Length: 351
Image (spheres, rainbow, N blue to C red):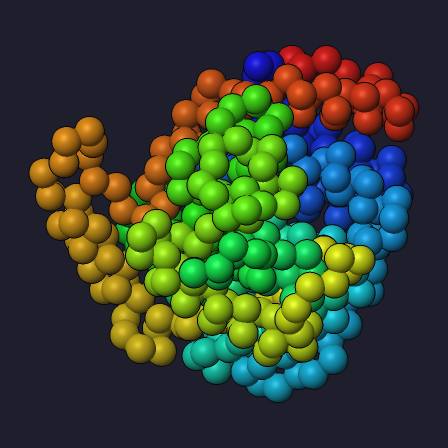
């Protein structure tokens, strides 16, 4: 697999999106979010999506430069219509809004509807925690195509329905819980297919409801399982609630419309820690709590206990030093796209 610097991959993504008619400032935001996903080890949400996003632009399912419309606004809440703009752009702006509301009111919440894929959720609570606040975000695709079977079922009825929480602290890396409520994000199935790899037992079932390790069984009518294995009712319960926050509360609804655009409904919340207790004391105590948890002797097969978000922080440090690996099939698709759009010479060779 080829290896690239994050700066080069951002340059590639930026010029591709500009060539597809995306304003320069939006192209920068999308490229930054995608490459950040690769940096922290979530390749399923990274540059692998460049060809897919370009296809969605062609179909009108992503509208570069779409207006950001505030449909409802109070001191502590807002409802945002993204008008099918890039989800990264819309949700980043909504996150800045929720931060400003929480700064004056202590707590604030915003819903977003009619926008495209927002990528890795972790970027948005990170923005919030960097302002000394606790952040939470949930996402769901409304009536769009589904991926996950409910606990006890075999047909797709739910999205992967991720949830993410970020906590400010004095630790080197952010405390960040970023998880799908399914056993795996759908993008990781596509990643396994591009890499010609099997997937672990417990990730997916085939169209008949049988466990399988072949990632090709998923697009052939299979489904992803809820997180939790034999305790999958817990992941299913979380998924159900995420869909209510991000699908029903946003007004996107539920169900399955095979012709629907991919639409990430979002519920984002910020809590200003200073309104509850001194921020400095809280950040110190979160660090001490994480260090206490890490004193647990590692179990067999583990070298240490990690706090939520630590593995992504360590992965980013390593990949910034060593580069980002991109599977051959993904890079082939991106290279073809660069030549098709006439930006290959502009981008140049990786340095």
